[in-house]
Image (cartoon, rainbow, N blue to C red; front, top):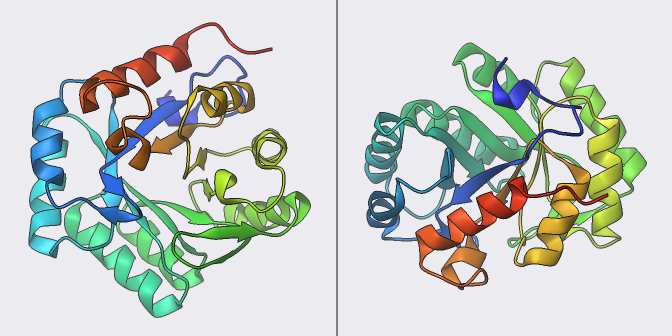
Length: 235
């Protein structure tokens, strides 16, 4: 059974997705950073749809896959045209996962046809950096609707929520029987504790590594987070 299929087991260890992004933009030296720290403990790597040229994105994703990594493109887009453009990028780059976008039947069908695991946003989202609004109950209903249409999982911007983020994360993951990635603004051990308690399928960290929130070079921080997440569970 694939790691990402281990959904509701409370002993599952959430996977870190390393995002080569800072302040909601892919960093210009993303290729060099991946090359320097590709042997760290992280299996999942990705970045956002802006601002690297497509040719550079394709080269970097190809390199990641050649190193045995699973690849993620996260698209921050709210119109169907922008969301579809991001899906086409993911296909051209051979990405394993498309995260983000406001859900669209057209994008969902495109991803299914191209073998991409689609994980759209839920809730009321606006701006960049994104702000998440809405109730947990509404988001759960949205997620179930999208899953019934065949999406792979859900991209939950938990720490961009205007309400109680920790409560949202726990209740949403508990109610949604599918891969949930908690994305955005995980920037310290308190939030890692909350991730361990919520037990999502995965979580992303990008800017916090570039801002040295976990103390060390980029690879040392990745390994610290991976090891901490695997340590004794919070009860």
